[in-house]
Length: 415
Image 1 (cartoon, rainbow, N blue to C red):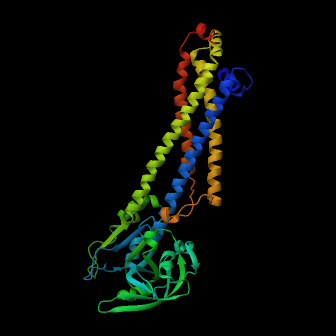
Image 2: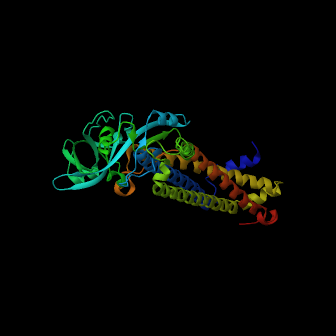
Image 3: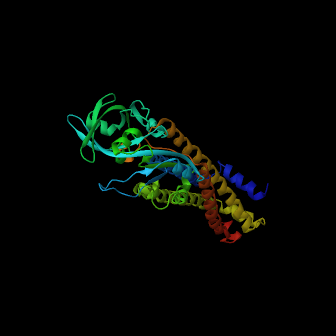
């Protein structure tokens, strides 16, 4: 062990000398400043990551990662169907990174009770559709067995739509659809009610079977509104979207042109809003690191002033300015290290408690979720600790140059 590290440890562990009436509180405040700064950074990061993950999951739950849809309208300004036959599906499956493909069809209709009515988009799904998102969002009822082969005459409603219409699970309700020549009616049973708290989607969509929607549109079994494509890695969704642009060029036999869009394009306003959160987190991290560094430097300066006689004595005994600086740099790193330790303990503990027990709730109508979400990213947490330590060390190293000021004969007489 070098004598610089030995003396630094003695200074750090010393608690009884008379001169420490001012230094000991300063050391504690400096350590507390680092601990609070690190805890706030971990909390901010975990909350923002959790919020982005929850909102993204809800948006993706309604529209998957990528959609292959029609770009051609008919005479009634409705989008014409895509030929979702085996040929198209095989082309999509060949693209590396695609994990799942599912068909869907949509039809605008009206749900009507004796007192109320609501215009909605009926989204038809089949047996190949991943309904885990809606299953996890169910608040009442059961999940129907949707099919592309036969009609179930059952629907899933959002809690908001069910409340506005005054219906509950098990109720029968009429739906009306505009045909080419006349209005058509269907009677559905409300099989289940879901709540995703994404009002833009909850108030506009009804889920039913693919067979019924195709029949309402007058389509055969190869026709759909489009394909929803799930990818293995969401970070590569834009790259895969570009690759899928070439699965169908020109027009199909019905004269329809296909388009491929990622969820980031279809819900651009939501993802733009989420990207703003990244800037907020960066600002919080920068401010907390600066506060932590400032408190450590303040404690270091107080220790240096209080130990100025010791500094002079060490210089008289032959210690160089570099050696004396190393003593206080080692001391400050110990201080920062303990602050990092306690900051991680408190920050991660608070995050775990919130993730486990959801103690802090939110207004779901405003924030889309009913409690503060938490998501851990251990690499980013590790990076926070490393960056905090590096910046604090750099600032400490700069501040330690003050030891070079003054001659030993002057500092040893300082009181």
